[in-house]
Length: 459
Image (cartoon, rainbow, N blue to C red; front, side, top):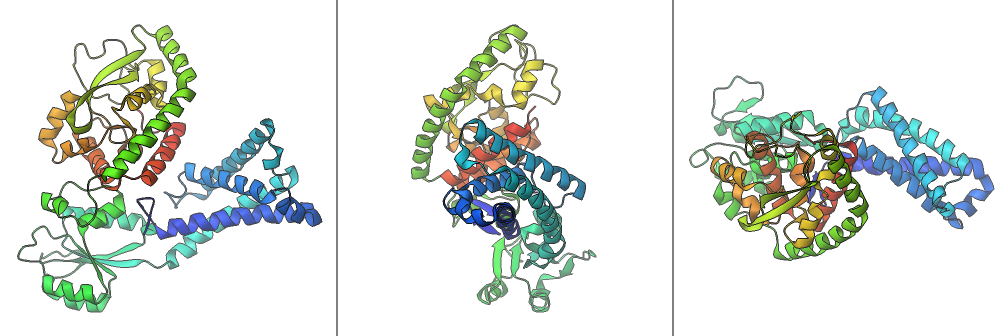
């Protein structure tokens, strides 16, 4: 896997994205030469034709991404055809918008656009089928042996087997249990023989008890011979893009060889660009917020704006603003409780506000006040935090940075309404805190736009 923008990206996905971008561009180039013939060179070089085609190619790549065709490579042919048609339609809409804005210098002529789109749909379908059926199977994959068969190892193995594009192939595990599982390769004393026989590229340490059973000397020899040795928690982080808290020990955090907490310079930089982004977003969103506020007042009793106490950086209380999406006085009897799926307290208008994330627009003012950032862990209510800190290890450490309007946990996991969901989101939050950087924030904000457009994760 490649390390890009503070994320682990499978090499196969990167190769597929690059190849499809080239394929799309070539298809439109071929259509341009077919229809413009001798004028094609003038169009490409003198009339910025190369830039016009580039805009169309970017629109199509974004369409592929928004349909999750890079995170889910194995899609039925019928669905793939439907997605391809929608993506081509989106490219035509983008061209129509450019024409409406009177920017003809960025529009591809009609004939090359129509022919190129048809050719692109056919070529993309054929290439995607060939890539998954042939190329993906022949791409180099690292063979992985696990020391131990703990719960975290089993979870890693199941994930890697269902996601071959990760580029890691589980061979089996070595431990001193008497397991009859086909994946059991032998006892720890047989490790050298197993390695000589299977030639793994990587050995992952997942033993529950290591003090007396870890074969340190043999592992050092293997490490010096070129085999990569790593802890199961590191493999888990790369595979799931979150940090497992189940087998995480404080010593692993204290003596971590990589950055753990957010770097001070990055935190300062985040505050600067969050403030700028919030100011621009507020100017753009003011008309929308006025319309939403009027709609709430017209459809239900009570104020349009809701104020709640939340926990911010270093456990400091602050007042969070959001549009009211529930009936007025929803927690008068029950007190502070998590929203549930199909919660009867949510108003019809509030359901749409939550689905489109419009109820969170007033939090832009929290960013301007300095209580929040554009990106960070979700700010939680103090009533919940007191209980969660008692039940979940490392929970209070998510408060070492400012909370955010959006975040790594929010875009990767559904709305949490249980302790189990909170643990999962904490693991994503810890990953974000460890990898906080402008590049990762840009990825999160881009994916947030995708989540908002597709109305995912709301409750």
